[in-house]
Length: 389
Ligand SMILES: NC(=O)c1ccc[n+]([C@@H]2O[C@H](COP(=O)([O-])OP(=O)(O)OC[C@H]3O[C@@H](n4cnc5c(N)ncnc54)[C@H](O)[C@@H]3O)[C@@H](O)[C@H]2O)c1
Ligand SMILES: O=C(O)[C@H](O)COP(=O)(O)O
Image 1 (cartoon, rainbow, N blue to C red):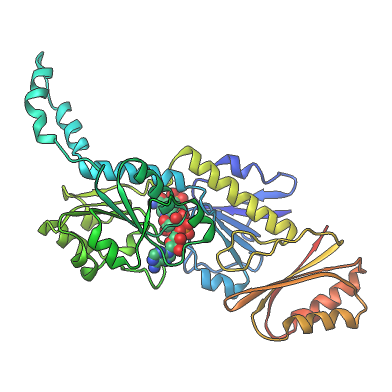
Image 2 (cartoon, protein in one colour; image 1 turned 135 degrees about the vertical axis):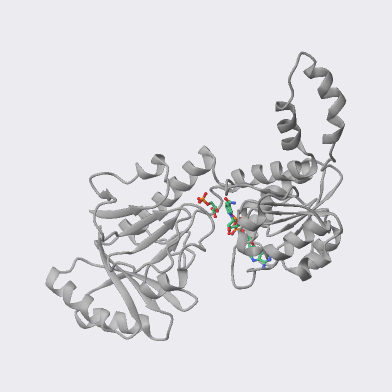
């Protein structure tokens, strides 16, 4: 029986993939796996039982990924599962920044009398706006979300220019050839009337929108941030909006300092909050975690390499080890010493850690226990799991 702890509202369509005879949800304090959305796990003491954390969503900055690697906990996310939802809200943000739709709708609710129609026609000129068609959209980060926005904004008549020095080959194939590729962020800032950011928070991107960034923007440009609040220095953007240097700031990340400013549109972190995205994310998170717990195979992990091998042998050893020389050699010689036959072995690394899968022939329990103990003693082994077919 695997124990799974959930945080936040995880759609049932995902949770019901965890069959009741094999999985217990939110029982006890020793989970094998966690499924969560934006709950912050920083500072959490990991129980020894914990093997994997699945983020039903894209951003993993709420999970202490480095500490998870050290503890041998595999962290997963759900690439692309909520990208369409974010794309649609960004398109809404682009239009809301261009036309005072919300203000106009609020105003019309204040009217009364049998000449409402006449009042509307008289007063509506206060709510005229501009169109996005013909304007230039600069996109920073052309991953799952940025690439969808690029294609649709082009279809809506915008000139689109994107910047992403690490874009994946798969995503690059899906981006329209009409989308121009910028060589630098400066090129985006120089040309774009609207700028939208779709990068993760990393030490490189933290606070990337600062005074120097804003200084390079076209006067009166609009900034949209549906990626993370930490990417933008709030003091800098508030000052720029108040001076009129930035026409509107549209963000999905609330902060008291951003509220009650008519030129800052704050959404309550709604980017991924659609029925479809919540279901997609929950299903992908549950499937990925289940696959890992049951087979040891790793897909969609942010801290360990992809290792996806059909299990044909009766016993699999799934080992997390430091990425240092001679690990595989030492594990193999421990097995050889006991005449245990290796049928398949794979070792892949990512950064400072590696993942090794060793499929072996049927082995008596006492012998298996002994060799597992020996492998555990090798300097650099973080943890080892025995999975039976
Ligand atoms: N508002 C929401 O509800 C919501 C929903 C989903 C994702 N997000 C946020 O959006 C981010 C992006 O999501 P995604 O699904 O597109 O992720 P993704 O991994 O598919 O794409 C991120 C892209 O950013 C690029 N990148 C990384 N560093 C960069 C840099 N310094 N300059 C330019 N490009 C850089 C990567 O190469 C990648 O192509 C997530 O990390 C998350 O923080 C927010
Ligand atoms: O990174 C993400 O996927 C989003 O920020 C979604 O967050 P949520 O699952 O809390 O809505």
